Amino acid sequence: MQRLAAIKGMNDILPPDSARWEWLESVVRSLMQRYAYRAIRTPIVEPTALFVRGLGQVTDIVEKEMYSFEDRLNGEQLTLRPEATAGVVRAVVEHSLLHDGGKRLYYMGPMFRHERPQRGRYRQFHQIGAEALGFPGAEMDAEIILLAHALWAELGLQGVRLELNSLGQPDERKAHRAALIAHFEQHRGRLDEDAQRRLYTNPLRILDTKNPDMQAVVESAPQLMDYLGDASRQHLQTVQSILDAAGVAWRINPRLVRGMDYYNLTVFEFVTDQLGAQGTICGGGRYDYLIEEMGGKPAPAVGWALGVERVLELLREQQRETPAAPLDAYAVVADAAFLPAVMALLQRLRLHGVAVQMHSGAAQAQGLGSIKAQFKKADASGARFALVFGADEMQAGAVAVKPLREAGEQKQLSLTDVAALASSLQSAR
Ligand code: ATP
Ligand code: MG
Image (cartoon, rainbow, N blue to C red):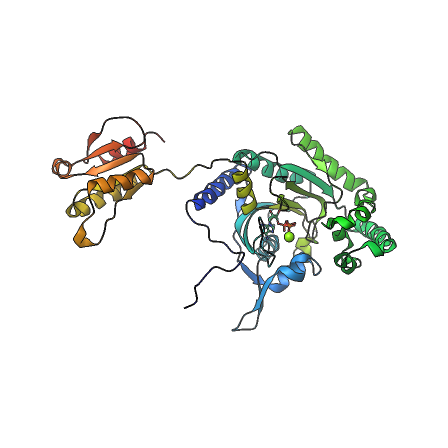
């Protein structure tokens, strides 16, 4: 039989690594709560039309990265979500979430893009995102940037730089676009195939090229910043002054354009030099026209998404230890005949908050294995204490508690007061 394996570019997340994921997610939840962002969960599969409309026909994602398929039963065109903003906006519109004012939302979950798998780039990857919908003010751009910045601090990440740009408003972009096309037409011979193809569909994206041969023609291209009117400039300045007051460093990157069509005004990315080519760990911006585009009442919005794999990789790169889930105790059981009583007790201990791993031996006939072998397992488990259920202890209605990680005598504790036993096992936490 052919060996079954995961799809290329889609990874299993296994223990002990999964503990790092859970830790990251718990840090995010706690921080979101402090910024008053509430969780939203939308389906992983959406109608293909949602992304075509939301992201724009001529974006990389829609042109070549989507996992799209036809539902065999009813012929519907479906797509595994490549990002979550389109789905969030659909849900917000569908459920009229903005009827009583703006909403601050966050999500976490898997996204799917058919890209060439490499370090920091996968076909199933995970994003955590924040979206503030219904708020027009630049202070919200600043808030959501500060939120991401606080996350790096909470995670202990270093050396993450913030790059900012403004894409202005549609009319400003239109004037810039015409100038951009004229510029690239003048240097047509120096454009690569990709740029030729985008010249009239999405010239702004040419600025984003990674082709070293095109750097000169891109450097000399007209800058969108020079086409911004007063209101757009003021918007950016307000964001900058809030970031300055909060001590968050930023740098203007006039070539920062972002992959999706839906952005306007502020766009930003958090980048690092420590992850090679995949150095962007988080990107976002304002998208004031998307909600209307998706059939909702016009409402502004701003948001970002971070790549979980890249953030975890950066933590690893910086040798940042992530706290593992602690195990309080490991139960060593001398005789299989004690198991009903022991397991009943462990059940109660766990309801009192104790993390305790039960020893499980070989098949029934061989019993649980020697005490020595069980202690070896207890040691390897990382538990702080061994709970030893021997014949004497069972007779006395007690358990021997032996410290495994620190000095200290083995103590015999009574089983009559489970709450007291539980709290003595958790005392160090
Ligand atoms: P890139 O330029 O690296 O392709 P992007 O502009 O396509 O990124 P976004 O759509 O803005 O990325 O997604 C936000 C974040 O999600 C990125 O900054 C990155 O950290 C992460 N990300 C995007 N695509 C992938 C992928 N294929 N694998 C892993 N992480 C990804
Ligand atoms: Mg991409």
